[in-house]
Length: 266
Length: 242
Image (tube, rainbow over all chains, first blue to last red; front, side, top):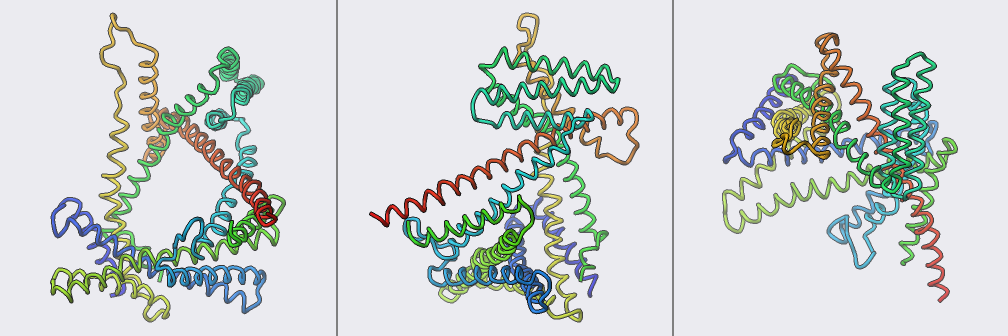
């Protein structure tokens, strides 16, 4: 009862979804959509469990006066304040996401616009700084692979700049200098072939950037699009195909009851 | 601009600066904003789920069909309403986790149901929606038809051919790199090495793309602080003075 029934349910649900794919006629035709709605409804009940866990965790920290209890109070105020604004807006206007006349919005959307959006946007924008410091560590082009990583990143960033000719030209010349420096470093390491190739490529990039400086902006965009559209896409596609193949194998294991870890969590 | 909007702008600006204060070091102001974000986001998610899932997909559908059954006596409407009892019961079973180890095993049933659905979709949906289209998009021509001595190959044609070869070699190389069932020696070693090259370019390009996206967000937030917050406040005061 505790273990076999869940395995049977998983098997039946999985097989039904596979069968509905091959038989697109009634009653199977609409069954997949219906089952997905059911899963969303179950997810809605699970949301209660999630928020309940969060509230319990912070209430216990608050009542035990644990370290950082004040921040738990902030979280609880955030939860109950937002819930209250959502419920009140919902009751008054029939939907929590009420758009009123002009720029006016209901209380819940006000919370979204002035608290969630700025916090979320700033959190992600903060990563710009940390990514820059991570790049400093990751992009020390000591190996050929690191050089490739850095070159691709620089080319894509150059292609995204839309601030005119001079920055694009300076960027291209810096990139050329980087390749030449990396080549010289390899010469010091007695890797003659790699060093000479990098120096030649670096010089070629520098000369081309100066000769075709009028086309630098367009060229940078085209190079970025080529890198994103071919080598980057190839790597991404290879990784994703591998992931999907792994996912299919895992799905078969789940349906056949070989993989059972999900029923051992309670 | 209303007072409510101005208040919102000031709160948003304060929270923005609080988050940016982390650039100095971890501090109480940042922690305050971080914990507020967790609470507000969780509650936002619960309210939107309650509205768009529980009300729109469950309660409203049940009431509509029940009313249709009562007014027309339609058996279809009756069963459309009644069948919603199944996900409701499964959902309630999920809540048995609240009541301790004697009954919380019942929550495995709805979990098993959603896992089964996900596994089913993981086979059919992934194959039809992702695997086949991606493989199909990789089967590209590596030669342009119609090239002859009379009509020699042109620059753009060379670029297309080279790009297609790069894509095909890259996908195959990346797949070989993640194939661990045999040692990467010989042909597999060459394929694996080419895979590393493409993975490095791919990660580098993705990194560059992410950096630019984050910089764009940063510009957005700084623009908010300068134009919306400071500029908006000045405009509000000017309107008051007039």
